[in-house]
Image (cartoon, helix red, strand yellow):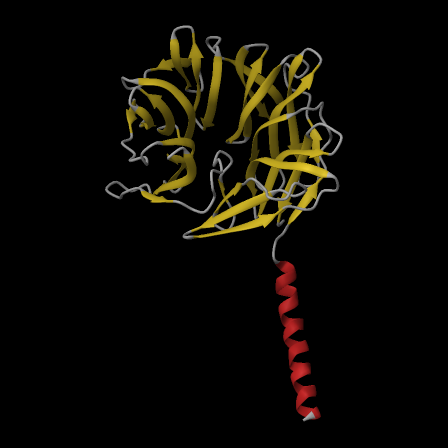
Length: 352
């Protein structure tokens, strides 16, 4: 009996030795240091091109108001970039995207709008053709860029074709565009507030049309995620008896195929920061039930799982605001409030 027991123990130890490396290889979230800004800070967006380059945008609070904030990840560390035009002037930076070999971001420079472009030669600015009251959103792809907002005459959709600007019209009844995203210069999507409720519009290279997306009743749209394959994912909230729940809609990009709607167990989480991860699943930050740790959701098919970021000593609120895929890893950028101080910048990485 003692001999059999010894054999069983040896087998158990051998199995543990085989399993442990795999378990240890499971990706987890780790903290990345970020040079502090002037709190309170607001994070706008994060974009990455592989594991060695990412950019994060937003604004900090200076004595005379908002100041634009730009950070670069080089694969090893975060650093602040102050070399762009207007870096020391009032304003803010919005969405940031990679367009070919360049980095593009929307810049509100003391009320005037422009697109900042970073190439191998440094930063340059493309002024907008008019000043808007509200710069709601921006998107860019090779050969095209859009800025949507509003001025004293109403809704404005400004389109840049690489050489100049035009103003595009939208279908009748559209009151305001809440956001915009593009896959190519001839395939862009926008979510709108219309006279009859929320709607999704699509640009086909010639005009904007109602995409006839069957949004859930009493729902809004937070984001649209068009992918190179043609697949499109919409995220938003549906309200029932005053209670919100998150929904996701997916279309495979093929004519004749229907939209598929699911309700993952995310409560009333905003999907604004949702991205497609390196594992093929959808990832997004969610409200954490632990004040000292961030929390992320992974939605893969019908299964939703959650993971926590690293523990932060004396933190009372940790909020990832944007996610991006960096090769085989995920990168997040947001704010962390440590007891006794105002929220400042934080970043975390899963894998890599």
